Length: 115
Figure 1 (cartoon, helix red, strand yellow):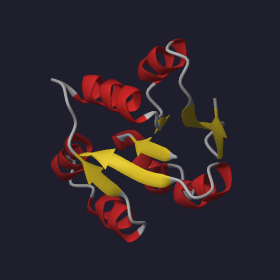
Figure 2 (cartoon, one colour; figure 1 turned 90 degrees about the vertical axis):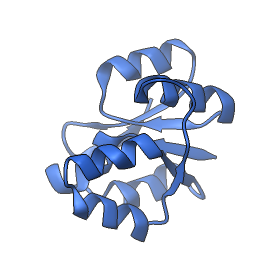
Figure 3 (cartoon, one colour; figure 1 turned 120 degrees about the vertical axis):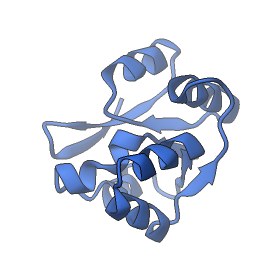
């Protein structure tokens, strides 16, 4: 099973001090962690070197998205790959859940949950 990490999800370890990568191991064992090139560019633009280093350390695979903006690329990737989205973006969550797909998010600033 693939889990697509959104930019804001990769920032959680630094903002909320939650090891989301460890939490994902328990929530989705043997998950293949992926992110989009556009999410990596956003981390680079925000100068989030720690998030980029941690992403590489945890073996997150970077894939090319199809579509205009990052959200469109995410939705297209989820549909094509049947992946689970890991995000904090409430609007994006609504769209994904409405399509009958799963989302992993952070609740109460400390617990990673599958919806």
